Length: 560
Image 1 (tube, rainbow, N blue to C red):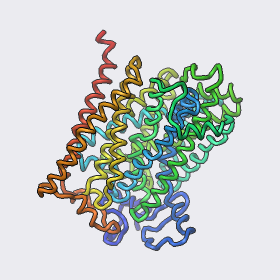
Image 2: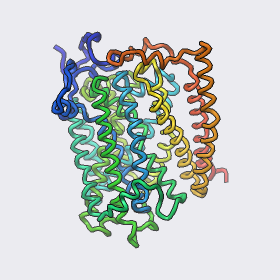
Image 3: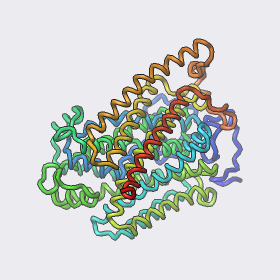
């Protein structure tokens, strides 16, 4: 008789509500959530609110975890720094970022449930091994640097209470690995839920800052920055955006939805899970800004004071609001870092399993998925060693350049996502509609401009930030005004002449209730559409510019 995590399971795929393209049979079965179970054979309707809420409780998880994980150590530092330097005046940025979060994560949730395939594997099959290697290797590098910042956050947070660095990071690393390696998805999710619940210390933190509700409401809806729009304000706005949609989030949620065995039947529940997570994340980020704003009007720790690291912030809050507030700041940082570390490291392991075509599921044990857990354990071990042995100056520099690398890689990750969600062979009737595409392409365009802005301004701080942003957006607007009408007109003419089949119109005639992506080897080769070709060439040009900018910065000291 097969064991719980055995791959030797034979299933009749004709009647099952899952995609047959799954790589790991552990991704097929009942939904075993932290708060309930839903049978894979459950086709009953949910007519009562009680049944709906019980089902949602079982399905809830991937969206909530990826969203709250967005407020990780880097997020805490960025949000509190925004409050410390600009008071409440940048709260409007958070409200604008909520739809960006929701659109991006809804697309990956839809890809995961409909295809049954992880993000890394889809990129490899639809864009080739070269682009897959680029996407995955860059993801690994960025994720590892991000993981370093999470353990740095744990160190600074527990260091406030006098816990030695070696003890704090080693205990956190062992705990993260032990919870994941149980072979029980439900236990890992319960641990993440407990940590997420602990991160709600942002509520008393914000209240201890004695918030002024009138100005908070005003700055949520009225754009601006204290002291006027300046180069430093623009850079911090870009940093806020950079902490909102990270490449690891795209890879994590698609694979986690798959690992939790959520099929398209339950996609609306997963969308609601993502929405709830997005709202909580936005409220928590606002609470951190309000908490940081407690330093805005103080003489010693106001805008003129240099924000060096999260440890500085903890002690500054203690000196301003008292030791209880300082302790809450440290606890908030620890919980945020644990959520981020758990999600980021798992994102890397999922992508690794996809890349080498090996079992990668939290439903499996170390014995039946050694490479998956090996990748998970090695990255945690290396991150713990580097943080434990590194100096504070090195740790501060590492945290800074994570933002630069994220800014460079984010547009390419989102662009691949948009192209996959417009591939009719992959999503059939589930492809993006025109409204979603409009917002998605707008988001990609803005991210490209702002990431270039962030990269150039961070590497060359002597440039005028306001002028740089104006020039970037003016150039992007001019290109869009010329290319967009030309592309649409050319497509319509080719369809009218019969030279091009309108695949999207044909896909819309298919039945969403029964359509699933076939196995990857049965998919036709990707069509060379104008959108795909233009996007790939644009991505290459963008990466060349980014590499040149970074190269000039790195090698300029040797030239002079």
